[in-house]
Image (cartoon, rainbow, N blue to C red; front, side):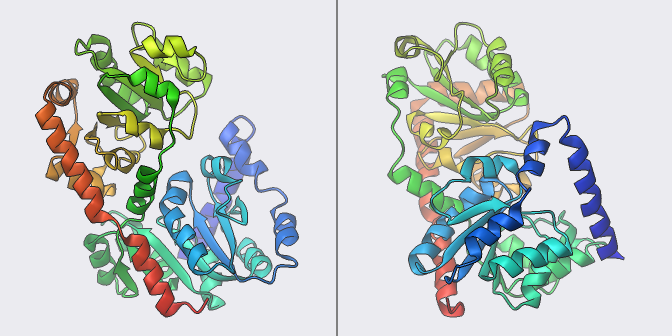
Length: 416
């Protein structure tokens, strides 16, 4: 019965997304990107004699989280063909040509026929699912064919369906994995409670990813000129729900702090809405002259792909999303030693946010008064800010190494 209901939901989702594609751009990309996939796979795999390593990511965030493992796997097993799939257009659109993969495509909806078709054509020798996304038929077919199957950087909370009475099918999905690498002890305890013992704590591979960015960040001369000798607050992945608090701080600031805003959405309507909430004359990095950018106090990053390196120019940061769909990546800022501020909603899904808050490197807000208070503390008390910055750097340094643990396990358990 559980499987019948699961299949019904997948079919219903397929119908809904097709209807939505008639008027929704993202849904249209979802449908268009999946057309002709079997022919595309046949073209690439027909004459392939290399063993195939398949990595699946839900979206861009999961891909970046898994990237250190993909790169380390390529180094350890250079003869493998790296096949990467995405579920979401936001991931595929930005990484479809990434050189880390030999072939990068969408993943079709999870049906028995799609799962058999993909595995029949690609014939993977090993499969990795990154953090989230548990698709029954793909996992079942992999287990049925005895293909080594791993989940990396997994994170579980008691609210997940796996730990509910009605989560029988989802618990079965976890049993298909040969090994699950989890981020923390809490996740491991939850798995052991439901008799999933093929699991171990590796940590979060995102730490390894951000450390690589720290070692060789992209330089942006326009932003260097904008910063000059000024103190800078970077606002990363902001939503309107974040800007309702931040606009007041920016518009009323008297400290001489400059602000870099990298909104989550960079289409024209979003940028126009952002600018309407700001007084003065905010500039956009792709639209305004170098001279105007240099003299401005607010710089909007109206393009994608820059944010992870932009944090190098900041002194502290606000990270958006917690008042909406979920907190965005705080580690990209923290790795540069930036104390971070964010909303207080849904943080149990982001253990690093809770850990850093407890240590004193991060600060949560629930009101305008909260933000005003911590902003004035970070912008006006250099000793306080530098102490929080030291906490951030130490936290990153002590949290790396997840990738090495996963590769060490594979060396012992995967023949390659």
